[in-house]
Image 1 (cartoon, rainbow, N blue to C red):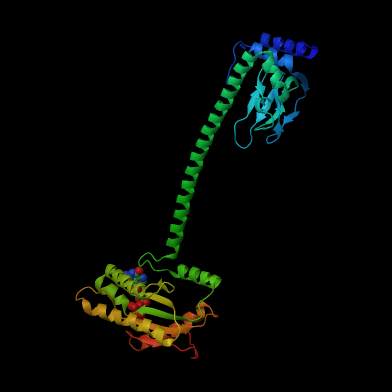
Image 2: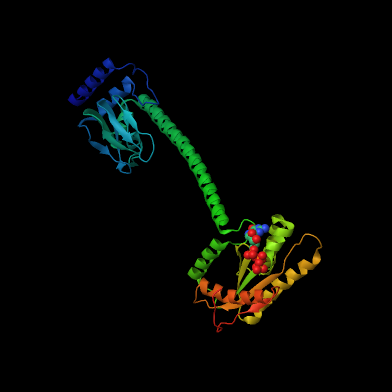
Length: 352
Ligand SMILES: Nc1nc2c(ncn2[C@@H]2O[C@H](COP(=O)(O)OP(=O)(O)OP(=O)(O)O)[C@@H](O)[C@H]2O)c(=O)[nH]1
């Protein structure tokens, strides 16, 4: 026995005198048996350490195992994994000893001044030669310890995974709710068409993505709608407004936009090349409303509609388009309603 190992064994004895029980090996806490400690102290070298000293860092390669003779070592596994504090007679870094170059899975830092026993991979054979039975027992324990650590890590990762999955579910639900809320904010409750805000947002998106080259606009207003409400009640009035929305939905293509601007006023912005195309839409709207009016006797499904129609200039804004279509609508109303009036680009605009 050299002077170092005698000192180490003395440290061990000092520790045993003040410790509750170290007679049997404890797999979970990695406390060495007396015989193991003595063997490691015999073969290994002593190393003094100071508080705060780093023994190794996570990710570094290492070939050394350490046994604590005196003092305390903190192992930090990083992220949110629980760290470990090891005391006298406990060992760490054993895979370095057993398999040689091994990537450290924790930072090992001295939490107090102390004394360690260092055993390098090259010394493993000497340990085996000295006491094969003891080393084989130690090996079994070391492997069991690694397996237990792995299992506990897997359990923690599973729990973490479940927590992440549940957080992800909540996130999906919140996103879904947000989308629904956004949709509600854009949508008219009674008719499920876009409302004014929906139209504004849609026009903003249109401008971002690039406007179609040629578009037409219909401005549609119910004729004498107040009378429907007064004579048949608000619910029937609502049904008529929903009927108008259905006509617009049925005629709108995937790139067209049907919208309830408010009250009994609607619009349909459509991709159209020329006046004829826009007028086809407008005539369809007015004649379908006329057809529906003839279908029922009693509470009305529909009322006559006035429509102002025009082509819009994609370089101008909504207010310009609206004013143009409204000019046509105004004339349609003046003519007694139930008809379409075309508004040309070049015509002088008067205020609505
Ligand atoms: N049932 C129902 N009525 C509504 C709704 N929103 C607005 N109104 C009514 O629609 C009516 C619109 O009246 P006016 O603007 O005078 O229009 P109008 O009676 O069609 O008159 P003209 O357009 O000149 O033919 C008002 O009486 C509003 O109370 C709604 O959501 N449901």
